[in-house]
Amino acid sequence: MAVIIVTGGAGFLGSHLCDRLLERGDEVLCVDNYFSGRKANVEHLIGNPRFELIRHDIVHPLYLEADQIYNLACPASPVAYQYNPIKTIKTSTVGMVNVLGLAKRCRARILHTSTSEVYGDPDVHPQKEDYWGNVNPIGPRSCYDEGKRVAESLCMNYHLAHDLDVRIVRIFNTYGPRMDPNDGRVVSNFIMQALRGESLTVYGDGKQTRSFCYVDDLVEGLIRMMNQDEQTGPVNLGNPVENTMIELARAVLEVTGSSSELQFDPLPQDDPKQRCPDITLARKLLNWEPTVDLKTGLTATAEYYRKTQLGD
Ligand code: NAD
Ligand code: UDP
Ligand code: UDP
Image (cartoon, rainbow, N blue to C red; front, side, top):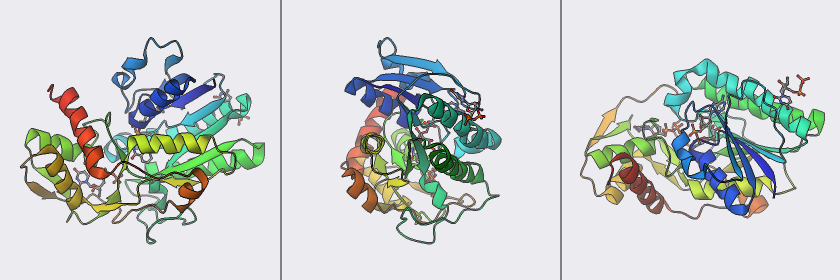
């Protein structure tokens, strides 16, 4: 049994990770300031003697003991991370230093969750780990993109300077139950709109692409990456199946049985046109690839929203 810290553990991905680690028999210290996460995501774990919920903001130092640290703390949806952009940058920079300092003192292995956003609006497709990206350093997404780029640099430099045992993953769009229904991400928006019979808000012409990975697959990838001894990374984790937003909207209408219309709204500034991971490295290093197809994952997510948001 290992003692494992999960920062951002009350968030969407973090709460699923806590579930899986506890199932494996680990002890989990979940650290979260509830900025974009919710206690409700981990409510079912309270009372488990191997689970501890700690309200803490990683921008401030934290002193705990652990064998491993998963660093997920950072708002992930554009609406959430642009709500307080300076706080978002502080979390990925000052907060990252604190979590690395903690890992260094405990000699703990740390896995940092970076993002496909480090590739910005990419001009290379699909994106491989050795692509350096195309990021606007002063645009509305920069608090997130550039923060995450600094965080990766900090991880590599702690690894090189202090021989810290670091793992970096770059996560591509991931969805599933416990995504905040109001966080403005496309999957949560479309499903909630479809369930309420409202129009689905497609931004731009809807031809921009993303690749959507189901949360269970992603969490499996995180755990495999943490527990391999060969590479620091970064390693892409995501679904190589690429969909346009119109295709996604149609899939949501199909799985929810909704007859909502599509409504075309303006495209936000700096919205990446195309995004798709090259997961050759994850396949080779981790023997990992997504197993849940889009319709199965959307059905499970819609079911969750029906139960928790609509009271069905
Ligand atoms: P989320 O917003 O649901 O979870 C993030 C959690 O971090 C929340 O519980 C939030 O309250 C907490 N948090 C934020 N700032 C904090 C701080 N300063 N101190 C302590 N806790 C803090 O988002 P998510 O989708 O679960 O994302 C988790 C991680 O994965 C993030 O780092 C995100 O950048 C990364 N990621 C996610 C996706 C995705 O599609 N879900 C894609 C790429 C990267
Ligand atoms: N830190 C922390 N918890 C620890 C150890 C360090 O939060 O258990 C923070 C502390 O704020 C420190 C930062 O991490 O300033 C970086 O630590 P490091 O040891 O790298 O550098 P220091 O600033 O202590 O020289
Ligand atoms: N999007 C959309 N309608 C929405 C929300 C988002 O068409 O209601 C689009 C958005 O412009 C982007 C894509 O869906 O092109 C994915 O957006 P999301 O915020 O989920 O993630 P990210 O842009 O960070 O990949």
